[in-house]
Image (cartoon, rainbow, N blue to C red):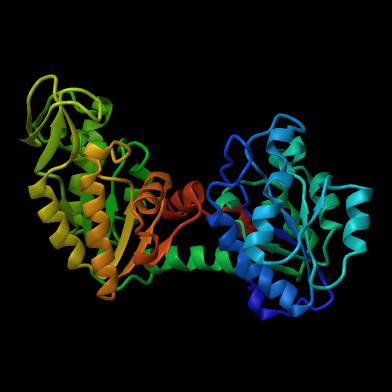
Length: 395
């Protein structure tokens, strides 16, 4: 896979797949520009070389040409981040777009209309990919967040740029961070897996179990393990059809000499509400009609020791219902432990929707080594899958 830093884009029209699928407020203002900021280095490199950056992205899941999801809404935010004017093409492909690109000058930036206005994008249509390819001399994929999709702009298009396809700065960082954990991680390597369901993490666990030294299992999925071990979990969330699976994971960890840390106590509530009555319970003795909502103080002490003694940390999933303030303390504490370990020299990678949301909400983004921008793509990488968008750059 060739990097953008291995070439010079002087006088080239460079077609760049970015991930500008950003959240918009009701009045169509960008509420979180981190994905735009993440693409800045790649775009800067192209225009500083004297190339034209032709940016293409999707936004949401439009049914046809939905004006609510036009990329015209984000032009101002892109200009603010890049500090340069951005020309907007009202069409994604076609003669008009072709003219805008052909008439552009080196150093200019053009943003195309929403790729998903065309059904052919998600269908991975060859003809649509070919039309897009006419807009550039070179192709750069910097959209890690969509690299797990075999779409026209992410995997099909690359074949039209035999020796002129490159990985952007963000894509390189994402791939490098995952490699740093899974392949080159300095020992001890710790994975912190949280969230509600064991079933959504099973492939990740199977892929990393022989590459890690320690595993913290937190959040809702911990109750499936505790129940499998004979504990009483009251009304806590549990996948009853996954009890055998939980035991087999613990057995596999034992065979691979992986130390597993389960919570020993939890903050319980008598209702799924921020204002419920609460009490601290041993995790295997939760009363009927009470449910575990957050990691308890003893559990956090155990997690703290495991985290602060690790050199490489992967964090995927919160350890409590952090969206409710009453039950956010465990996730905040884990964030603090990971931050402290990072400042002492550990490498920490945070990825997967909810843990990224938590890290942003509680301001840990700059205190960990890397926060992944690609939820599904990162999870599929951790599962050991080859992502179509990356495979296309390697062929």
